[in-house]
Image (tube, rainbow, N blue to C red):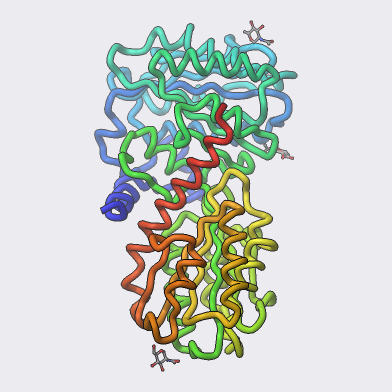
Length: 433
Ligand SMILES: *[C@@H]1O[C@H](CO)[C@@H](O)[C@H](O)[C@H]1NC(C)=O
Ligand SMILES: *[C@@H]1O[C@H](CO)[C@@H](O)[C@H](O)[C@H]1NC(C)=O
Ligand SMILES: *[C@@H]1O[C@H](CO)[C@@H](O)[C@H](O)[C@H]1NC(C)=O
C-alpha cells in the first residue's frame, strides 16, 4: 500500500527538467505530470531570499534560476497561482520586492524574478525578511487560499532568536513554511526553527544542486504526498554484500542485479540519496568498495554495481564487512541524512559473536540495519544471526534463493522507507528545541 502510494506520487508529479533544455524553456512553461489542478488551484507562494555577501553573484543567479524554474511549473494568474518575493541582507531590500498582485502570467513573473538585483548584504537578517513577507505581503493574500512560504538561505542569521520569533509569527498565522539551506555553513537547527515540520526542511550542498530538490519541493507544495516520498529524502545508504564461495558467480550477479534495481528506484544525487558498498568473504574486499562521495552521478553508481566482482571468499566474515561499513564508510555520512545499511548474506558467519558485536555497534551509532538472508532458514541460514544484524525481526527478510530475491523488492522498499522516515524524524528532533 505504502509503496504503491509512493510510486503513484512519483508518477503523478514528475516534472520534465533536463538541464540542457533549461535555457530554451525558461520562458515557456515546463511540462509537468503533476495533476493539472495541483498546478492551477489557487495558491499563494511567497519567497524570502537571502541576498547576503557570502553567497556571491553567480550563486545568487543560480538561486533565482531555481525559483524561476520552480514557479514556472504552475499556472500563474490572478485567479490561480500567485507569487511574491522579497530579498534581504543586513536590511530588507523592499525596493526590489514584488507582491501577489504584481504579476498575472508566467512570462512577466519570470522576467521579474530574473531582474532581482544582488545586493551583497553584509548581514543575514532572516527575521527582517520573514516579517516583511508576513506584514507587508501576506495581507494581500486571497481569503481561504493556501499560503506557502519558501525561505532560501545560505547560512545562519546573526540573530537566531529573532529569526525564531519571526518564523513563529509566520507559523502561528497559519502559513506553511519551507526552509531551504544551501552550502555547508547552514545550521540545521535554524532551518528546523524556521520550517513548519521536518518534511519542510531541505538541505543542498551548493546552489547548482537546488535543481535536485525541485521535484520533492513541488510535491510538497502541491500537497500531493499524504504519503512519504522517501526516495528523495536525504539518505546515506550502505550495502554490505556477502561474496563468499558458496554463492557462485551466477547467483552473485543475480544478487547485484537486485541491488542495482533497488538503488535505481531512489533519486541518487549528492543532496538526496547517496550509496556506498562493500563486499566481504574471509576479509573485506576494499578494492571493490566505494564510498558515498565516490560517485555523484546515478549512472556511474549503477554501472559500478553491475561490475562488482564475485570474490569466492573462503569464509563468511560478516562482522568485518559491517565494521568496515560503519568505521570507514558511514564516518563520511551526512549528519542530517538517514543512515541505512542493508546486509545481504547467504549463510551464517564463522564468527557469530563478532558479527553480533559489530552489528550492535552500528545500531548504537544510529545506523538503521537491515538483513537479507538468501537460503533456507535452519539449513545454511541462522535466523538468530539475521535478527542480531538487523536488531529487530521487522528488518529481516529472507528469500529461498537468489532468483527469488526479486520477490522481496516491494517489502524492502516499504521497510527501508519506514526506517528512513524514522531516522530523519529522530535526527530532526535533536535539532529542535
Ligand atoms: C532587519 O531588517 C529590518 C528591516 O529592514 C530592520 O528594521 C532591522 O533593523 C534589521 N535587523 C537587524 C538585526 O539588523
Ligand atoms: C558560491 O560560489 C562560490 C564561487 O563562485 C563558491 O566558492 C561557494 O562555495 C558557493 N557557495 C554556495 C553556498 O554554493
Ligand atoms: C545458485 O543457487 C542455487 C541454490 O540456491 C544453486 O542450486 C545454484 O547452483 C546456484 N547457481 C550458481 C551459478 O552458483
